[in-house]
Image 1: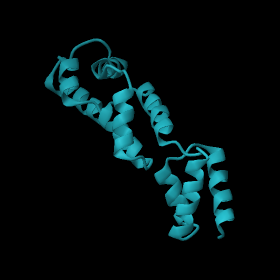
Image 2: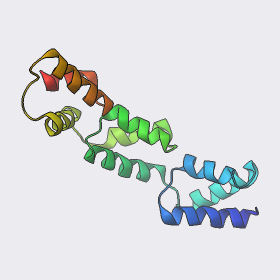
Image 3: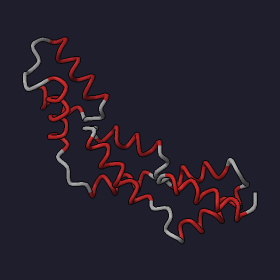
Length: 143
């Protein structure tokens, strides 16, 4: 594939949805050699077609709407190919009370009541851990 064809392929992908630079680099490397991929990546970045910070903010908002915690959000963003520095900066810029988010997730699934026995408490802990909440927030929510 020529550089122009690879660039057109990348723009076609980006027309459908936003990609992280890591994702688009993986897609392009399947189509061409590393030198062409790097040239196309530079061109995409110079035209501001790729913006990892903007994508991170958007994805964090989606994950917060799903009541996911910090570790789940970081995992999802890493899978999208975002750099850990970008992820940490975007999470730092969000103004969210993680305890409140954990409490909302608990109340949505289990209601306002406290755990009646050890089994139910363990079920709540597993559910909230799966959703990516910290153990300190979980313990505070269920007690």
